[in-house]
Image 1 (tube, rainbow, N blue to C red):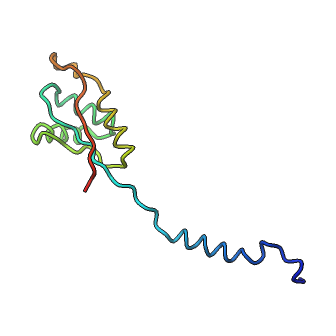
Image 2: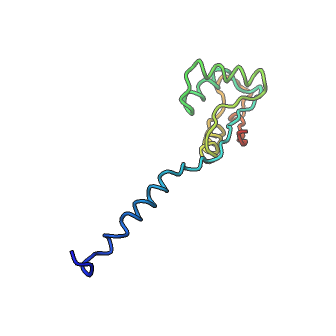
Image 3: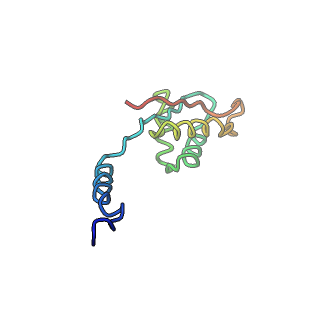
Length: 118
């Protein structure tokens, strides 16, 4: 093929492929992780916490019970570690979960915060 008939694709292709390979070899930067923390109070039952953990986080009843016990014992429990946006969503879902119908004095949802994971 005469050189005046070469297309622009003929030569830069290997250069472009090489650049793609270099970009693909780079590992994607991991987003910072955040803990979703559930805080203790005296206005929510273990049953409430277990149900919330199952519905919002997909935890088993056993895992939900372990979290409820940790909140009761330690005053707080990390219920999820994830990206900031997902942590904010889960915190907001906890705040919107509603009151515990098993406890008459309960005024609303439990309290949760997020904090950077170390």
